[in-house]
Length: 375
Image 1 (cartoon, rainbow, N blue to C red):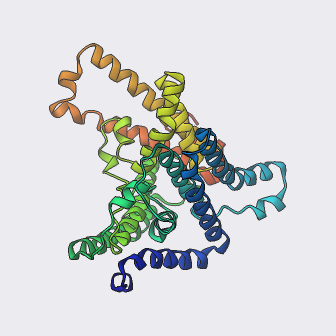
Image 2 (image 1 turned 30 degrees about the horizontal axis):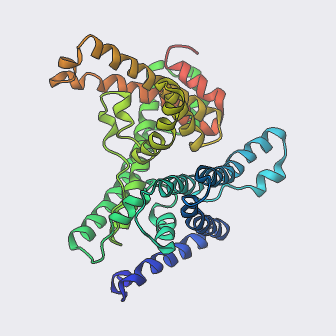
Image 3 (image 1 turned 90 degrees about the horizontal axis):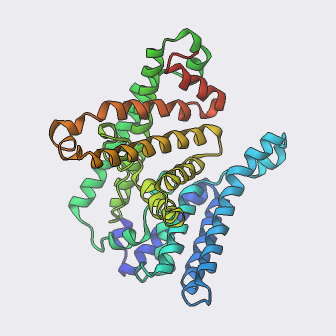
């Protein structure tokens, strides 16, 4: 209410920045100061890259700087733990939201260099990077989309839609994900401890429940972020579109964490294809980046390799299907739904690695092997 009552209208964006900074600062002052400084640096330096004698070097330096910052906090503690050094690990606690704002700023540097970002102020950029509803759980909002999807006047329909979306998210999280699926699935540690006593069918059932829980949990946070942002007249990008009914693994990645998938397609896949002229190399590079973005763990590398292999196999199948001209009838009618069960099974199997991240890589491999009657 305060936001919409502010006059003049140009005072609303600074108010939103200060509101976000106050909330995030209460959670983590150091992380809030870091994102403020990084955003200010990029807003100052990225436009100057266009007028530099070697613009790509300036843009590349900005990207390497933010990636180095991300890697320092995300991977140095893992290395320190492997070396048995606890002091460094305690100093480099992962700042909140670092993965999200690092990818946002890379997008900013690239698109400003390409001249695709509309005119904006530092307040606009800070509101985009620090927007508190979406700061820690996404979606990875694009700056051009953010600038073009803001209302200057409140809309009853948008506010009602925002409140409804928040309630949808809360029902997903509190009632369905944590109140039902997590209770039904049980503790992953207990399941792994007694893995030898479980059948292959029980392993599939456990991972299916955990996959559904991950979907409802993550999409719930996205719902709340999108709904809360609508209360400020901001329409964020959608992040999920019923991935449980995906008809192929490629279709799944058009429905699951769509903002991350789109980011990786623009800034990893397409450059890799341009560099190597090989879509398979680009596919594996993309999912390797996705895995490393999620976390510095062997499980995430396995998850990325598994999904990359799935997409590569599907790409080969699509080429074969078109060569045989089977797509003329297989992509129509009831045939479109044939791929839903195998896609669901594939994604469920991939959950063996994500469910066991806290228990180590060997636990993930054991659980994955159990799905195929091994162990």
